[in-house]
Amino acid sequence: MRVLGIETSCDETAASIVERDASGHATILSNIVRSQLEEHAPYGGVVPELAARAHVSHLDHIIARAAASAGIKLNELDAVAATAGPGLIGGVLVGLTTAKAIAAALGKPLIAVNHLEAHALTARLTDGIAFPYLMLLVSGGHSQFVLVRGVGDYQRWGTTIDDALGEAFDKVAKLLGLGNPGGPEVEKLASKGDPRRFNFPKPLLKEDRLDFSFSGLKTAVRLAAEQQAPLTDQDVADICASFQRTVAEIVATRARSALEKYAVELPGQPLRLVVAGGVAANQAIGAALREAADNAGATLIIPPIPLCTDNGAMVAWAGAERLALGAADPLDVAAKARWPL
Ligand code: KG4
Ligand code: ZN
Image (cartoon, rainbow, N blue to C red; front, side, top):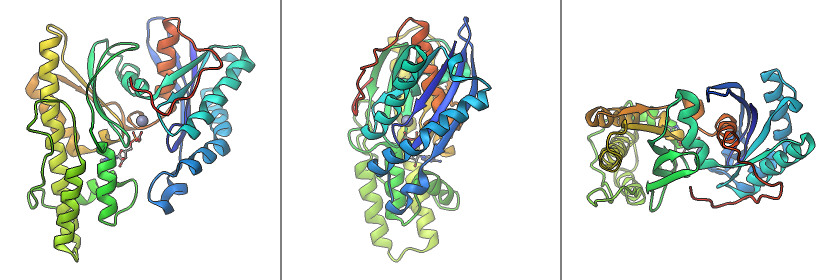
């Protein structure tokens, strides 16, 4: 089956066509992503109203490109999937309404996809892995461990009680006067800095739970920056390196505990940790996770970064997985700003 996937829940306008064969093997026929970074750059963050308008302006063209690059016509599709939440509601409405229109015009099934589920199932698209597995989603909007038992069968083991990890990178970058998105900027400067110069706190880490908290860490970074002001380039690099080391240690510690819990609760199951979300691009965090996984005897799976960040292929794939189980949604299905897994 061939499924069109539409993603518009944040600042990427994306469409993709994915083919799933009867054995569950996936082929990405096209994957087109248009980032709105430039539109939002003057504001230092994503402006929801601007995002929704940009999705309106560009989505039709992105879908046409996805079809052309896959070499198929829309009427050759078997289903249309779109992110129906969670996310910025204006953008979600644009994508979901467009998907409904295409599905209605073609007389094909519509699948309303949970964006978090799309991230959660991506490793099956890229690596063809079986259930169950443990997922760590670390993006600009989410930081959570999820036990993935099957399509539609998820158990959240921990989340952030304040900022998401990507958001913490973005806020630290902003307070240091770096560009947006902050993650890549912080990582670049961290490579020139001393990761041991500052000892930042690791909030919540002593507690026996799988949740994250990054807001106190961000405040500590701000205080350190204020104490050192005026900051030299080396100060900024040292702050970035120390912050990045701290979050890598936090994430690795939590991953170790999550894998221990997994081994206890799912005895005999292969230990697999899958990473999703934009922060998966961070090499220091990746290395810390690899060490944690190796020590636990677990396999670490980090899909190619363009499939870790928001994209249409993960939405098309989640749609295909649902369709293969006979699921589809009515044309009046609602968009949801909040929609926990
Ligand atoms: O998954 P994503 O593209 O979008 C959503 O939030 O859904 O993730 C974007 C987030 C941003 O906060 C960005 O700063 C962070 O991922 N990020 C990184 C890196 N690349 C992107 N954080 C740390 N290091 C990176 N190399
Ligand atoms: Zn996302």
